[in-house]
Length: 254
Ligand SMILES: NC(=O)c1ccc[n+]([C@@H]2O[C@H](COP(=O)([O-])OP(=O)(O)OC[C@H]3O[C@@H](n4cnc5c(N)ncnc54)[C@H](OP(=O)(O)O)[C@@H]3O)[C@@H](O)[C@H]2O)c1
Image (cartoon, rainbow, N blue to C red):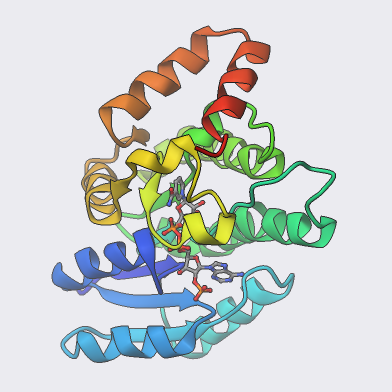
């Protein structure tokens, strides 16, 4: 039977690259983001795949319930869940709007958690349930001037690794993708285009392919790019205070 993948943040960047990989592999897709026009373009580009478009703002607290209800109404059962939607913002905690930062927590943490919870019964039924959560290299240390963003990604990594262990008896794998700077709309939304970190960003195509391959192999954590792997390893051994100072330097404008 044809398998179904649900991808959040499917309209651009890493999510869009995931769409291409799964569509070319013959999956049915449920694509979710706010930009309905872009999602409908995706549907048009893959006439041989069964694609369900759900245009939804995942920073609204009732969004997941509405998505689950819509999928139930159409008898859609998900085998693979890709929790990819997310955004960041550069600026001190005090200067950034509290509304925007709470929206970030709702999108990056609460929606990801609730969607995973609601789809678990489906994933257990599937003989090969798989989850991929997109965290970031930001997950490995505190991030001054992006404090809430880094903290949301630390949540994603910790949550996903714990869930991977809980779900092992059910043969459901949970993979956490930790990209470093990647060329997508993220940098303009987060206003980090001119930072040292983004002076050498990877392509979203390469990042998604590494995520896709790791998901298929059931790997737990994948950090994209050699330098990012070294950075994440260094963060493990440095005192947290020093790691925070390094992160602050890396997020400085050029
Ligand atoms: N690019 C990087 O350097 C980088 C590094 C590490 C981790 N990441 C993570 O990678 C993931 C994907 O980001 P990206 O780099 O591909 O950036 P992107 O090109 O900006 O893509 C973000 C995706 O999330 C969707 N999205 C944003 N806000 C949403 C909302 N409120 N409701 C529903 N969908 C929403 C966007 O679609 P709409 O605008 O149509 O809603 C878009 O499809 C994020 O979780 C990000 O934190 C990115």
